[in-house]
Length: 166
Length: 104
Image (tube, each protein chain N blue to C red):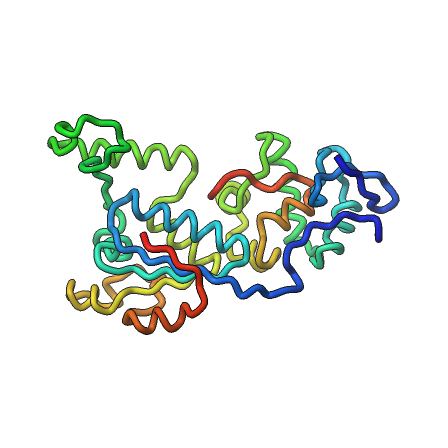
């Protein structure tokens, strides 16, 4: 056995690495980067806390989470003439094609992806101020949300974490 | 490409120790690999490993955790319980396959 090359899976050391992701945007194309990076981190044994605030609230609001949109307006990377992007129908077309590409790659929809993150051990937090501004309570939010907390609570609990602001 | 000795056999592996030849794997090797990374194999583990082996044979790629759950019917929570902390890497290591390349 002593000759065996064995990968180091970091079993013995607890690195204590943590990732905190702040989701402040509510469009479809801003939800997925957080999901995918969070999911990757969880798969590496890294603790992940997601904090949904401002427009990011749409991602965890039961009423809006299944209807997030992707708009090419102001997004030069879609390579679409700027004058066309605000036209009626363009957002729904762009949303549809983005969803289709994701489905083809077996990437789950927003609600399922949040479930996947929960099952993988993520903590999901909702911002108190955003809840108050939108007159929302915990029952209005996706059931996997751990709690509505204020900004200082989030900062406190993510002490030492690496931070992503999206 | 290095080789390593597992259960008395010379086995081709990559620099990290993942098996590189599909056909050099067998259940005895798997048990030795599991012991080496501190996993006690149960029937549930074998269900995952057998799915990985079959799926790789058909699709030519190691399934991701998501695929093990949607196509293999073993939910994500269980995968994290069976192969703690780094389930995707640990399950593919024991199954003698490369790490999954997919992101989700």
